[in-house]
Image 1 (cartoon, helix red, strand yellow):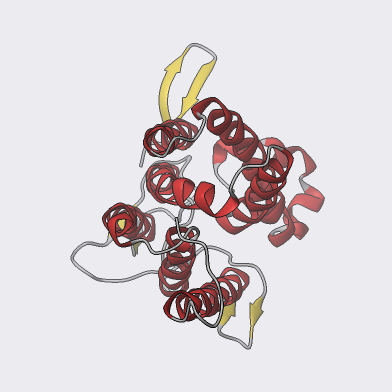
Image 2 (cartoon, rainbow, N blue to C red):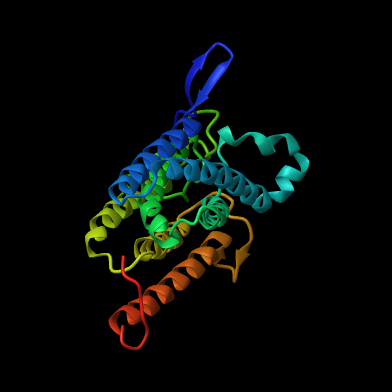
Amino acid sequence: MHPILLQLGFIHIYTYGFFVALGFIVGISVVKKQAGTMGINTDQIVDLAFFILIAAILGARLMYVIINFHFFLNNVGEIVKIWNGGLVFYGGFITALITAILYCRIYQLPIGQIADIVAPGLAIGHAFGRIGCFFAGCCYGKTCDLPWAITFSHPQSLAPLGVELHPTQLYSVFANACLFGFLIFWRRYKRFHGEIFLIYMLLYGIIRFAIEFLRGDDRGDIYFHIFSISQIISLLLSFISLCALLWVTYKHQHPKTISLSKP
């Protein structure tokens, strides 16, 4: 498509980086608005978002480098070129999650409530980021002959040229946008702190697991000759989230047996 959004002499503004940045801005705007309505200090939320951003980029790039270790072993200079694409969501998610937990511990913020505030922002920010993937040609799909198949032609695209492919990036955009809408809708039915975040992890894991079957780019090691590492992580996170939801729901429905604090 269009990997370079704008070129001014030797200055290049890459479409991928632009949409990743836009996704962060939109995501933090959503988070700030929700934090304000819940009485959470928005300045602390902005600081948390900054640390999450740094941790997410580093973690996402590190996981991409690990998955493509043999390539980067012979092309060390390519490691820093994140504007060409190459961020693995789960790598960033894990490092961002650890960073957020540490930040909440240090500043004594309610982890479950903060997680619920952040979850919709993650979904909508991710949707914008996948638009960047689409323009850069990374995270491309397998070949197909469907009416909505896309063909990349730009010489700097990371996707194969002149071949009809599944628009997996756009599948992710649509899925994450729908997930965002559902999380916002579900807030009115929230029963306990952490529920929105657990639902996010459960549904995103299912979405990612399904879309991975249509991905055509290098997915790293394949386990059991079927699953990529991202699918293994998806299954694990979805399973953990489902178990946590069922367990806390049980606690919520049996307050005489086990006490549970409500939001």
